[in-house]
Image (cartoon, rainbow, N blue to C red):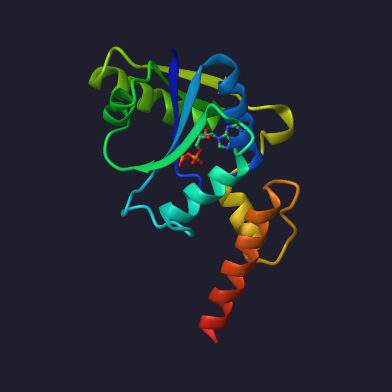
Length: 165
Ligand code: ADP
């Protein structure tokens, strides 16, 4: 069985992520979507909320398992029996960061390959941070994230606006 890991922050999950995850399912028998819990990186949603949104969004993909993890991705991947980590590439700017990460991970564990997938054209501009920016200003993000995620964003930002009063 070929197993892959799709690691990331997913704060929150977008259709760009879901495109990469479903394409990874076509190549691997099982895909673990791993939500990084990094206290140094301030997230809008807790790791549990992010896992719950991902699990809902991938409910129809029965070879996908969503969970949170902390520490080194290569250690997590090894523990899950994965042969590869799948990452998405959008623009040239992603390349430099991803090359650095892939090189470091290769140094840490030579048995785990990093596989890159090009973003689909319609999602090339899409990122969680852009979605958050638009949602925080009250804009419509329903073309970029699943319905429950758009609702969670609206709820979170209105709660934050309320607490600032
Ligand atoms: P990070 O926290 O490392 O920036 P993210 O959680 O944003 O990672 O995303 C996880 C993975 O999904 C990364 O490989 C990222 O490049 C990829 N990704 C995010 N948005 C898109 C998109 N619109 N198209 C393709 N890949 C994407």
